[in-house]
Image (cartoon, rainbow, N blue to C red):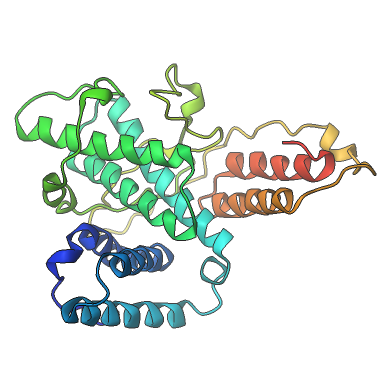
Length: 304
């Protein structure tokens, strides 16, 4: 258990929700909790690292990070940034896609609002690995706007409109954050039922592109009910998944002598492999196969 932090200095108001998200994930996903705290630490250092109250707070936060790092030991997601980045991004996008699926099905509720909002916070966290991709910047903007828009509609007794309608005219106000983040939420559970945005008529909306092969459970509750004490004797069988066809040329493709792979090519191939490994943690065979094919094609042809 992490040592409690001192009261949050007013200067650090902008990172309080990332710290709350870290607390929510201490047991559920310690890797996500670690990077949320690391983001808060790095952001706090930029805001104020000199005043006594801020220095004291950052010192305690650093202690929490060190404790977490020791507990996680030789976890690849901590020792290798590329694995950690894939883990956090995959988690954030699954949460985003769960909320987006609920939104498009017009199932508006507090847990989907919090899923949108938490996804936006986790996308913030990806900046500890470097500059965010344009896709993730757009996902973050859309998720934060959606959380605010639906929250305000429900609060005012109005029925929200699903999808990206009205995005350009909406602003995001930080004073809404307390209401958004006060609702408990957990991320998507493992499920063989998937939502494929590639099958949506409007998968590429308002400049926001969801990567092909990214999936989220279609009927997963954002908040898991507490244990009722009732033991089920039902035996569940996994639902068959739609596995993508493997390009047969990849089996016979041999590296050509004149191909010169750059360091960036190797990094991209490694990232595809890490994404595949992360997808398998969620039993998402489709995404794993697609990413492995991308890595193999890049390494054998020098092209994506």
